Amino acid sequence: MTKPIPEGLHTVTPALTVDGAAEAMAFCQAAFGAEERSRAMDPSGKKIWHAEVRIGDSVLFFNDTFPEMGATANTTRLWLYFPDVDAAFRRATAAGAKVVMPPADMFWGDRMGVLDDRWGNRWTLAQRVKDLTHEEMDRAGKEFAAEMARKK
Image (cartoon, rainbow, N blue to C red; front, top):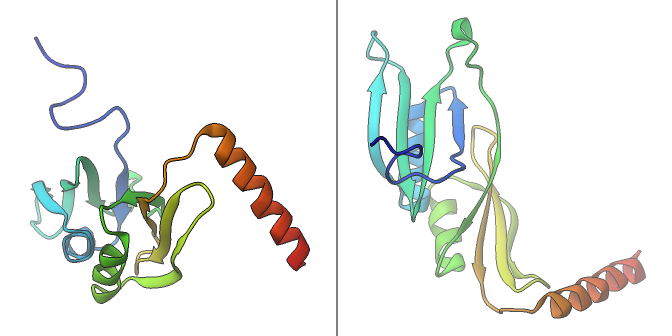
């Protein structure tokens, strides 16, 4: 029996359409340790119709732009968890990602930083460093908001 969700995928799978999908995939390999799972080229052999890369336990789809078929470039925001966010952040910046916000501890229990790639995609890299109950997170959020209001 055919499974409704293909093996190795999840219910939600991000799909990135970029001008230069092969380069974007190479960036993901260098920046995030992505592994290429598949690649289908267009008849010219120059552009990617469909490709898949795995980062951790998740898959991203990539394809080049094909404006004549309605596939225009898009940008997105992606959130990636790593066991060592600081090391992952250094690796991504060494691969060419631009720093938007360096890693810092957040009130909800994550340590996170934000990067942009050259295609305009925003990558938030995070690591859970503290497990909080809903009540603890709510209290920490209110304290954070109050502190931000005091700084205005």
